[in-house]
Length: 136
Length: 136
DNA sequence: CCTTTTAGGAGTAATTTTATCCTATTTTAA
DNA sequence: TTAAAATAGGATAAAATTACTCCTAAAAGG
Ligand code: SF4
Ligand code: SF4
Image (tube, rainbow over all chains, first blue to last red; front, side):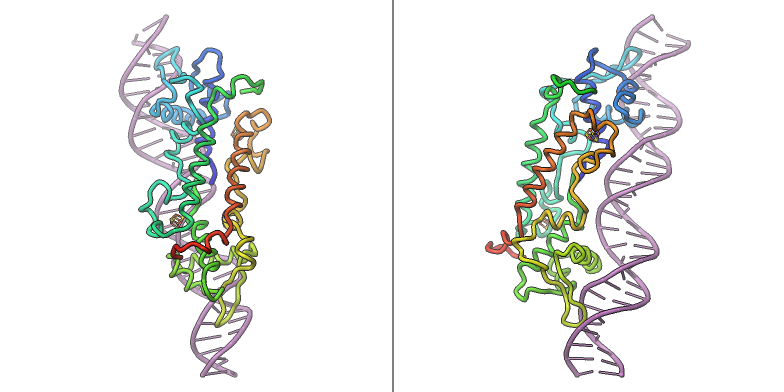
């Protein structure tokens, strides 16, 4: 029931890119500014790139930038890009994973909680961090 | 971001005890009826016993029964008895676990989500499963 | 072509999850 | 009193996941 370090790091990466002046940054910049192990940050940015959340530019003067407007990237998007689809219990996404699901009285509760959680995580988009005075 | 099998099993155990006619059952009964590995169920019931959610009776004719009214046992109680306090991100319960917390703009979101989640899980108490026609 | 930078796959150590096993200890019924 | 039935608790272990690192290739600019 806890978010992974990898997903937390990914959120930091996107937050960094959404707030940096130039609009783009290298792995090294991001990793250092956000206290993420460099090689791990590189892997995370690759995943975000595959999920079309960031875009990469190779070669000298390259780096990463957001693939779309911060207002159209949510915390949920980033988490699911890293961890795969959110699933608060095995039976929510794949009903066949539990033989007891058809008669289980707890199952609907997990479905409800998952919807609640996803709604809330989707509400927080990265434009909501821009006009505050906090640091990176 | 997923509940463990152990916690899911624990919920099944409490649900079983809250619904069984005699008011008490042995590890064997519970394990078989709820499709839980027998020795694992025993361990889980020990944890629930330590958390004062169930009470044990030793010796022949022994077994487990709920330690209090089902209306006073929530899904959250059971989960926390098994997994320890709910913590959606490392920084929520222990702020010092992340050096970035004092200036982090994401931190408050996790705090909010944790409250939301705990409220919902605490809402579902085991009396709410009793008047439905579903199986165990 | 040389440097800087990302791409991608393989590999690995640590931790957590998901259990099992064995040896008490308690209780009761024969 | 003794055997059977039940929980208590500690040790152990396989499997999966997490949290990374390493290495080589490929692209881009000067
Ligand atoms: S027992 Fe119910 S809640 Fe648990 S995994 Fe199966 S269907 Fe889901
Ligand atoms: S970076 Fe922010 S959200 Fe992530 S662990 Fe640290 S304080 Fe919490």
